[in-house]
Length: 95
Image: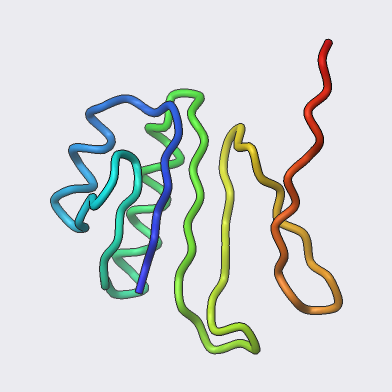
């Protein structure tokens, strides 16, 4: 299973992903693709995000049963805590 979440990306990128996955909510894609297709899609997403943020969560054979990747500016930060992947939401800081 693969879940991809896109923030502030061009509409064409979202349209391209609908060829491979379902979009149950704007910017959220869910599907089951091979590892090779998943990697190619991630490369495509990173190349065409145009400054937007991207997150991918996919199943894998580890303790948690999934792995996560981030690309670009997102509101979340992935942190490793003794082998567990956790999400940290930075505190909002006014400039």
